[in-house]
Image 1: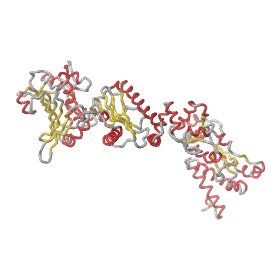
Image 2: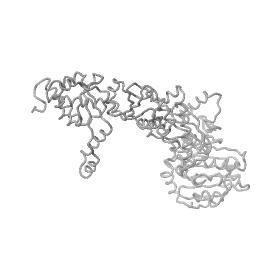
Image 3: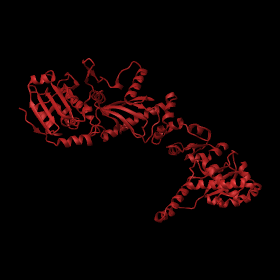
Image 4: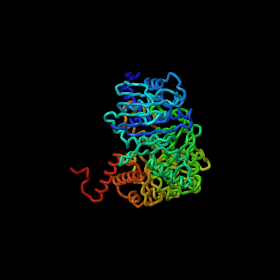
Length: 616
């Protein structure tokens, strides 16, 4: 007669730990059942290399699930140790223990995880490792009790359909968890977790006429290890595999291998640009069992343009077996995979091809990121990356061939501020205002000193401007004297110069030190108390921005040689704000107010009538 005995564990607490703290979803129950079957077969193969290697999944009446394997099986004593005391292993259990040495809780936790979806678990097992041992029947219940008894071979054969050693597990669904045991869900989970396992794993499929068929879900070879008749055929197969598994058609793919950790795999290059801050995750298998579809940490952060599918025999999983354990082995693997990605990129960039053009166009940001840490990649970047310059779009290498000095603007605003004048004067300036570019040019300056790479300075632009003649300056003397007040209010200096193009009425000239002091001043003005006093210690007298008015421009010449003080002030204010807009600077509320007042005054002079600020 069966007698009920208690687990040496709070089962309710264990199930809550599984469902809410250890595993991301109850879906992993099927992975644990498959893992138990795979490990049991592995253990049996140590003594019987030619033993059958089958795992079968089928539905049972009442919405339950049955999973059977041809593994080593359990004796009564082994079942007591592995299933009654969770995580305990007081002695080495020969082949069975060896097979499970790398896993979380051996049979105990693996089987009991099924309580996340089941109210009752039944296991029948016949040991292959202990000849003559009686078959056993183990039943576990959600109330924390279990039964364990020997049964006869006839009872075992009647329940399992034969006397082949192995184990059979049956799950009865928990209320509101029935969907986890539904046929379609089981098929999807088993395929996801176990499709790469090197065993014969099959699911029973019931046809409309009631016929039952076994559908195998595993393949004998890893997808990237399959032999094809030609490289083109393999490329097409990998393209389809990526679309099916990862959901996109890759720009390219290449093989990965790290023999030290038994790792093989394939890397797929994303077909669209990716953000460096995005999720750099990959599909990872350990001993051909799926760990996760979004596993982080496999590649260096700069390899954000690649998604990998890998299988390893030596990397360690975390407790939940849904991620990889961060240790020295993973660190070394990450470095090795990073080198493989870097070598592929270098090979692609070294030769002119459609792939290189597509890769540069799509993943230029990744090339820039890699160039910040790799001198060889920096050299390649200088020869392939297109840059916006005042001489047109070209690579840095092409720019150097045309200019003795490689001048670059560190921000987009700095480039836009000087671009029209520099372009008209033939002054070459590179726009290094986008992500990584200024740092990349800084590294290039140290890497290639003969190129004379340096940051654009105000004096570089000022040298291209033509001073007015003494007669012209005398003609504009009143205007220059009257510009002092509005210039002071705008925190700038007014210059009159000649420059191309004539259509540009004004430009702002500044440098990094001026902009730093302006930013410090704005922060200081907005601060009070101790913080404002601290900022005073950092402030220092510095040159102001120069608002350079183009004397060759008709509007500027009219303003400078006529009008009165009010018109001069409004004109200067308007040209200042226009120069800001041309440089791409955002208008602050104060700037917008200045522009509105200046336009209102000029319109009043043009059409007459009361001024807007005089109306009641």
